[in-house]
Image (cartoon, rainbow, N blue to C red):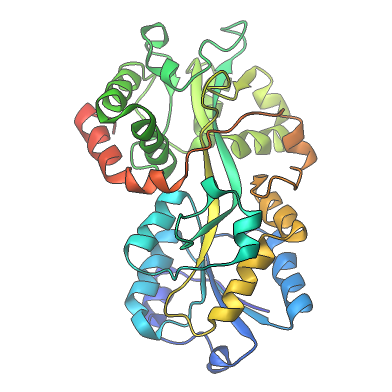
Length: 338
């Protein structure tokens, strides 16, 4: 198994070149991955052991890898693109990078709402975007829905990332799907009115804003909180959380996923790799790399996630996030969400 790290400069220099001469040979699969978790090493090694197919891997950011495949064109050595968020998968899809995959294994194992309707990509783990609150300020969660974040009672209380963040773009895209563009814009404008501060930092910074008393509520992906519980438990002792919309449609989830690159040289091996990612073994390792939830319902989450509690997910097809992404960005711009 070979892994290649990439800087932007190295990527530009290598664009259009094959990973290795041997990479075109039978018995290999070339993976472009935006994931960088140590548990993935065992995942790839297990695939090699089970199939005899050698894994060649290049790592980079999602945007850089998509750009690289585009620049390589029909000569790309990439067989599989792994990335995070349905919005980024949608971007690769709209650029025509993915091939349709018709696999009984994938269709049986991966729920319909977590895969592209035509099989261009599949989700292999999920992440919940949840609401956090200051337990010293509130006896319980002041709101229990995403819609509640726009209510006047939270004026000056909300910490959340910028509008350029793909997680927020996908959340707003889901609200467009549920409520329509006008209602979604009203919501976004209401959240802006409730900002405790201008959007800054990542998801961890939003949670720590609650911990520091800078904001009463925050929005972040669940695994950032799990990391803090594991590494800095005292820092979040006063931070509570709630899985939103449990009395209605359920909590917004996004995915880490992958698709078979249309012009890749090893299509059959690429499909076998995706089917492997849907196996019980791979589901545990793929999800646990970032403390995400397995996509296959029969595979239980790890102990740390079980401690967060069970929750109902919003089961709309995540492909809608990508389809509504352009309008979501226009709404953010119109309401002044920086």
